[in-house]
Image 1 (cartoon, protein in one colour):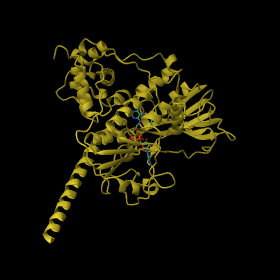
Image 2 (cartoon, rainbow, N blue to C red):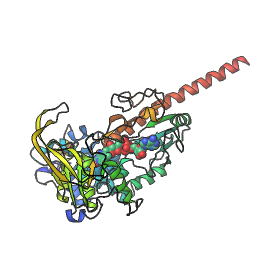
Image 3 (tube, helix red, strand yellow):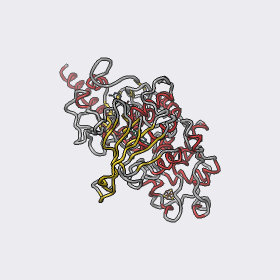
Image 4 (tube, helix red, strand yellow):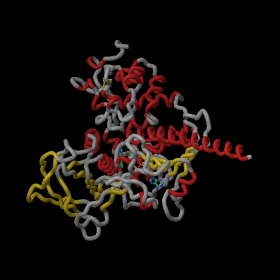
Length: 490
Ligand SMILES: Cc1cc2nc3c(=O)[nH]c(=O)nc-3n(C[C@H](O)[C@H](O)[C@H](O)COP(=O)(O)OP(=O)(O)OC[C@H]3O[C@@H](n4cnc5c(N)ncnc54)[C@H](O)[C@@H]3O)c2cc1C
Ligand code: SF4
């Protein structure tokens, strides 16, 4: 083993080939190509097989990374896939969208002196190879159980829970208000990070596994919806995985001008254009020939600026009130955006939106860094007198998301929620204060990451299984006691 591994001293880090920035600007295809076999083997062989693998420790799924890297280096690709998929329901998705620089790769031990192992790219290679070889099969249940579960939300949390519960034999029904599964994987994250046929391929496997999807079906009150109470009556347990969709607004003069729009509305429509669901004549949420300004410094802002470039914007500027070092988004995404032609205006915050009806310009205030704030990032304060104006025809607000008010929307005032409005669960158990109702993903954590949603779905499935088993045993016991009582009475 050792001969094949520990090659980080002689083998330099190599990333999969990145498409040329000019070509990237013209389409929405993924920007990274896949590793070739030899390249994946060589890159996997750089791993030093640490006794305490910090990559795994910092992976929310606890993926057994050193083992599947070693199997890849040895050319044992089917086993590598088996190990990688044992802890991750959707490794093809994590290989593409996980911020590895903040998780596994960011904690890779060889970074001290060398560059990290390219874990994400090898994970993508192993999974794509497994699909190509026909090794990825639906996890069919060994027994069919009579109990049924409802999962509200077909995002990564809901889908991971569905996959695990169905494998145990439960009758799994997934409800989603959208016409496609995937949640933000489909209608938030753009195709240049995650192409849509990756989700369609997974959808097919989940259907073949026996999961029943009820799409275009919203849970809530009102015509055409299924009420939460009715859903609860129909199923033995419910998993709430509805994500967070209320966009944070900005309370500035002129914010109601036409052309000041929310990031998710913009990205959702762009993703729908990719499916040809939106006609080309519809241009309200389109950047073509417009001077676009995106406000925010997270990954959603990066997705907006890069989408606007691809839509043919006249110019794209990102305004962020802190500097590059203190922004929450991934450094790699900033580099990709810069290569594609985005201008970043660091330490800048908007103070007024200007225009008669339609937005024409933004008044912006220069900022400077202050001390460390409560979140661990540097605070900012205005630079007195440094105010300028930037021309803009389209302003996209990417300021984060809050949970919707499920208690009011679903008429369940008794559902426990936190101070921030997220659903409250018993730590590690995913159970809410209502019997048989579980929750996970962004609706519990607040806006987070795909990998955390998958972990929540997988772990919630285990909690739901324990609950359903106990409930089944209690019901059987009660039925037996009733029979006995009857017999004694006869
Ligand atoms: C633009 C953008 C880019 C992102 N990029 C990345 C990235 O690169 N990497 C990363 O790790 N994370 C990224 N994230 C975060 C990631 O997408 C989320 O953390 C993750 O999708 C949360 O999963 P979830 O299953 O909890 O919710 P969601 O993915 O939001 O899915 C929730 C589902 O519930 C459905 N739903 C909601 N209410 C109802 C209802 N009443 N009835 C029926 N259905 C309902 C919704 O339609 C949706 O399909 C990004 C987020 C955004 C917004
Ligand atoms: S931390 Fe890096 S070198 Fe160590 S086991 Fe993980 S991938 Fe290999």
